[in-house]
Length: 287
Figure (tube, rainbow, N blue to C red):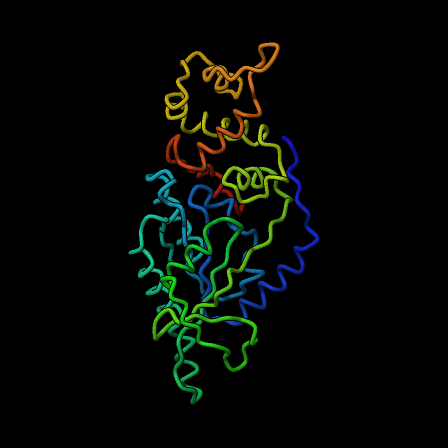
């Protein structure tokens, strides 16, 4: 398997900044990619979030296997003890569920402040997650693009910009980017498949080949049908390129062009709705 490289020099700095953001809020909205619900989880996320309550959002759920996504929703709720909400770009009604969950989780913290003689205040929340899981789109929908800034708060860094979502909730208008690490290359490859890794960090052909291996194992009929492959043909970039008559000089199939096609088809949901993480991996994670 090819090694996916990115430059980790910024990781310590990014983790420090993220922890600073976490310290400002009552509740965290953690965004995951529904197509890789395990692989888009930050390993040992508790080391950054501490005991901060969170709402887990499985975003891009419209691109995920519908049967599988319910399994992952239930499993994540059981493992973390926190609510899990499914969201996608085409719907808005799921965001009221997120807001209600945030208010519910923040209630004990607000009540403690009141017990100390302080006035009740809106819940404070931040959205965090891996790159390209849809954090900014969720922020934009929560604030409905009407950025009613509420300014600095006592004990809160002035540079941070807050937005009033409703009278009971303020959102930190800064997506907290969870820094990527590269110890686990299988995880890194799946992040590359959903475009959560810079394209400069990997080779399209190698990632596309690994994607076809996963899809061929778990969703073979979908892929064969989409690319018009015969049952006796191998699921390879070469054969997909030949089907499209993408031929280079010396009659060699254009593997590079085909790799980009396969990755784009998958990311746009044209091949079908898939989940790349296997259930057994999640269940045995703590073994």
